[in-house]
Image (cartoon, rainbow, N blue to C red; front, side, top):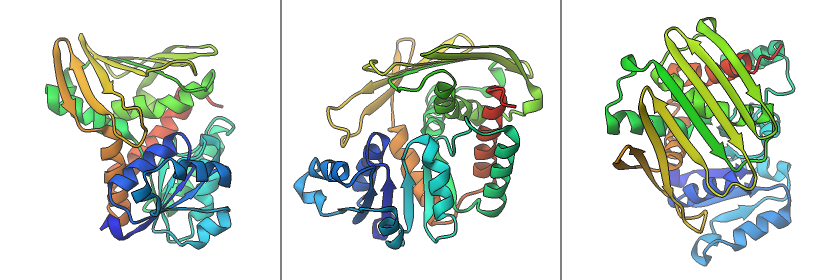
Length: 309
């Protein structure tokens, strides 16, 4: 079903390259790209193998991109542009797969965030979905290692990446990962959350909090010079570490594993699975109540944890 659809990517660099890889791998016959500049987009296209270059069509403007009347659009541009593009395409027939976070909450009041969230999810909930690969990763931990959520009373989520965000922006970038991990296991309500401390500096953001009888520590760090990301999750006394066998090309998927002690188990690539599953949900109109509540919770709980007024 997907192979016959026309799909576009806004934001051809960084994460957009991974989306391009996935769409090519899915056998999409026509892929339209809108980058920050036409020249940069052409450079990305030139890096592709000759036999797949013909599938990729570069657009010179947002109007040209919109005029293609695409079935699906992947929004992979910087976080502070997500809401602009969502609003631009809301009343078109194009379905939207939005890279996390759904929109930037850093410059908005809690009142404004609530208003935007209500409009989006009350009127257009079947129109878009946030891509959350950590849901697939979390499901792999649960299924591969028989994790029982009822026995978890401590979660330490450590995520160190090579991003260039600073201070609170680190949290805006990484909270969707950690919160989607928690929301996979638990029904978290803001009224149950008690913040014990919050610390941040130029390269790190930490938060220690509890809900019901579960204690959680989020430990985020971003450094542009870091060569390899670190994702480590402790559930009680059990440590789960992501292992990636990186490839030299972003057009070839990493092999992914999870390590617990001496036990190492291979898993499906979470990003690949997440993109494919979400594209299918959009095209088949299969976005359900659980998907909607998860996306809303990510925005509202993130706002609360960041202590926005």
